[in-house]
Image (tube, rainbow over all chains, first blue to last red; front, side, top):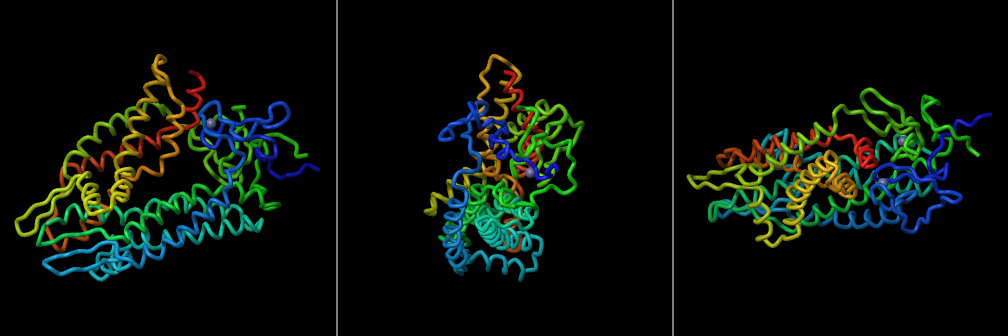
Length: 230
Length: 197
Ligand SMILES: [Zn+2]
Ligand SMILES: [Zn+2]
């Protein structure tokens, strides 16, 4: 009986360049010296899977969780207008927008600065744990979760850009000034570190451990590479 | 082995077939494997050239001006970065410079060079450059900065008079041109053009 289990590049002893998708055969006389083999088309170093993916993702996640606390507790900027000082944290900035009834920016900033960083940290942690436990639970949905974190992460930078614009624009000497505070530095660090964490996670690991759930839904066999699984 | 391709998200092998339009997706994780884009390199070259031209006014002219009690203050992209630096946050200043100015400029000029080199055989066509442009894609954040401008305008609307400057319009068009340029690039056919050189 023919197995419907899909054949991956790794099953077929092939390595796909992560940058330009060129395929390399990695067996027999073509066996690649994986230590520092480079793609001859684009020059990227070839790896079957991202190097040391889980450990790097975990290390970056731990760093992000640590920075997450000062990023949210410390003020990110201070607004001084006519002698009155007001320090804002990420959260109080959002609350201020809500209280003054400015709903569209309040929703944008709430999603980008509060929801996205938390969701990213939780989703990546969940993905790392599920891969470590070799879980075969819903690989497709886990891939969707990964894609979400990959796409949404950069939008958290919006608060850093708002601070940059405000400090340049509101520079009116004794009347009004805005100053950036150290919380902004920690917040930017969280955004950048989680972006690197998402980049170091290899979604192919989800499918490597998916067992019988790795079968494509609604298989169209003629599109698959014809190789019998040994 | 260019007639087969491995999905970059789940590693599954697929035969490459000619598709008239749209995208070929992975059968099990639905990642886009390759796309068919008509006239891809010509359109992308025109759009990156437009972007390069727009880049100049977007960076030179003020994008917002603020007036409180008759006193006016204008900002360009660079004044914000300079202000961060002067307030003792060189790391943030560097990060904003990188994501809003340096990376986008690198991508625009790099793409323009590659498209020119692919067309005229005499120029060397550095495939490494194309790889760097693809992998710095998430680090160009002009569109997020633009959203930041809109949020800042709303935040200040109650306390001062805000007037949009000429750079705001060029910035908007610039983002449109860069996004459209990236959207019209078909990675796979660009890589194949490198093979032919
Ligand atoms: Zn390559
Ligand atoms: Zn796939």
